Image 1 (tube, helix red, strand yellow):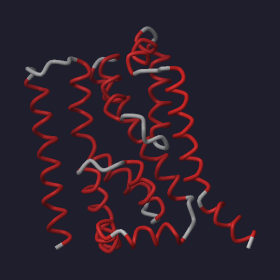
Image 2 (image 1 turned 180 degrees about the vertical axis):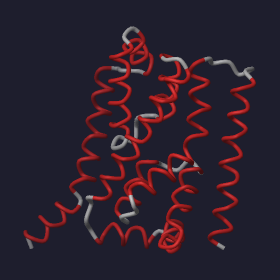
Image 3 (image 1 turned 90 degrees about the vertical axis):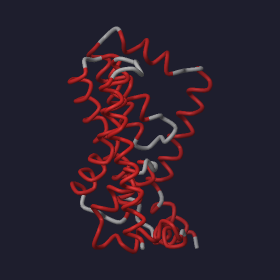
Length: 216
């Protein structure tokens, strides 16, 4: 019985670590009273330090769902010029996606598959996964679902890493560009900002319609 319990804990170890990190991050932020304004102040003065901190936060985001992705993207846009900010956000996004994917990849338990199959909505996509993994990954990310949850799911299902990162990054990219522009120049009257918003809205709506067609 003890051996079975140990195996179960070992199977879920990456997810357990993820949960512990979330709790620690939440408690630390609560005790220290850290806000996004504090982080802005820390990174604004030193560009090299800013790159390190932002990429670290992106990596942490891969296992700590309470970190707001949009805030990290806007932070880069605020600190750096647009081309460099976009490069930082692209690298950070890939890092974030990779971390959550690896958590799922090394979580070895049939219980996870059972949870997926019991959830009717997720199971609909799961049934289409074998022949449409790239499209399904793209659609789910484009609809704005949790990247951490999706990364764990697709990692667990052993979707090829390159395909997963490529499909999810393509889906996330329009929103990332939009928020980077806003972070650089928080101006709702900027034509570039509204063009980016229109593109992002088109991606979300198209993904929702396409997902309905795929499932039907």
